[in-house]
Image 1 (spheres, one colour):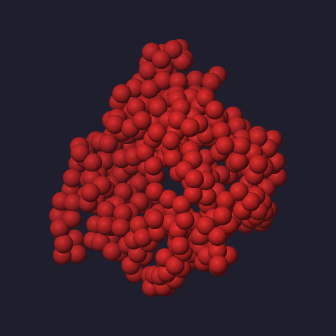
Image 2: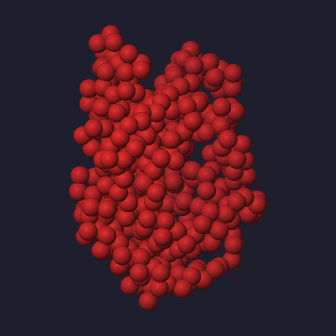
Image 3: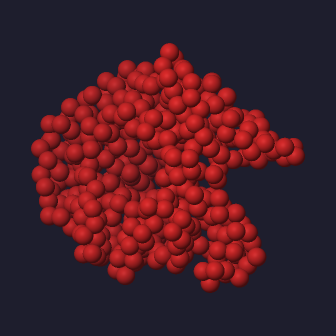
Length: 401
């Protein structure tokens, strides 16, 4: 590993460090599995674990645990300090739902407290709600599915400082695009939205049987993004992010020379691409199949508009094409055929709308950004999977010439 802290968190000593987090609550850590790892080029990391925890009364539960290093340690985390590999190391730790960066998470994950909050919102009169975690990025955000038996909602828990901005984005976009409206929010970080209609587009692609939205249908969603998004801060394009993406991969693959060799080839190819700016338009910022719901060929919901704002249309198509390329590597049979076929149809459409060479180069850059995915999700053969993603990026680069 590139840093002692990351080596510590993912190595055999990790359970000893994380055991301190659950011991604070009178419990004992029985098993620990790193489930997701996010790393900066500096080596600072956020690790989400799934742990088997034994409570004082003898009951066993499966729980999320979080650990952070370096600049990622949030205020309020319990910090374990010591030496590892001859260097000083500090690790911030906590057990779900007591994420110090997400103070609303304990309330949002409690069926009774959430029911009380929903009664205040006027959304439900239930005494308790069914609350199920769907995704969690420690210290960043959590998404929970909430139901009272009749209706379903999704609750997003964010840092308090992010509430006003995220609500503003939804208020702007939901008038013109099927972005879920914000039904209620608290200053502490709870944001409630209705459940999405249809099924995740990613699921439809993997299943390989359902009608998918046409490229024209996807473009109509992009065209409908409102001009009000242009007043928001702009996120960087894929090509200027190449060195950042590469820095992350060099950090996690420091002991994998084959990965580093292939990475160098991709970076060299991307640096040789001459970037051209395009017209600035409203963009989603992370437009891909996992962010869309669909039904009978129609886009029924557009999720996660945290990065929406001004940008270039090529990046929207490139993000979609890169994700479909990566999805094809993850699936087999009908799902792979569907992903590749869908990507080919979108590419043919998009190349008539934006400069083809730029589109292909940006798709390669976006794939580079996805190349840490196998490590991030702790795939047992992550070096081989990473090389496969980098090979796809090289294919896109070859098409850009």
